[in-house]
Image 1 (cartoon, rainbow, N blue to C red):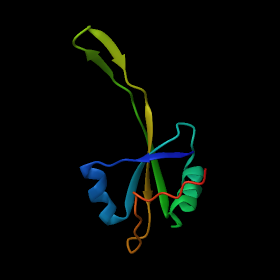
Image 2 (image 1 turned 60 degrees about the vertical axis):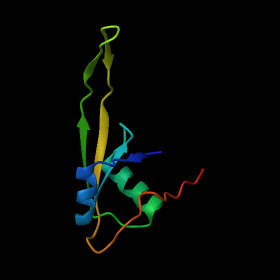
Image 3 (image 1 turned 90 degrees about the vertical axis):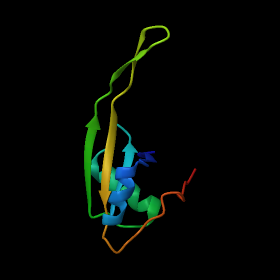
Length: 95
């Protein structure tokens, strides 16, 4: 599965009013693959896809003082026409 889950933050929800939807995607996915998978999931044609890699961080477990390495994640911002809307809570999973 190319699109793993939607990003549900305050900033991402405000961007949905402008027709921009944010997703965590597979690290090997390309823009064309995300665009076609988005269209098959939601039935809405995407105008554009912007992607970026969020670098993982090193956190510290304060109880044991052991480092915790958070992985890198790839995120995609999918833009659709402003007059179209999708419902993120109802995905069409074909398993």
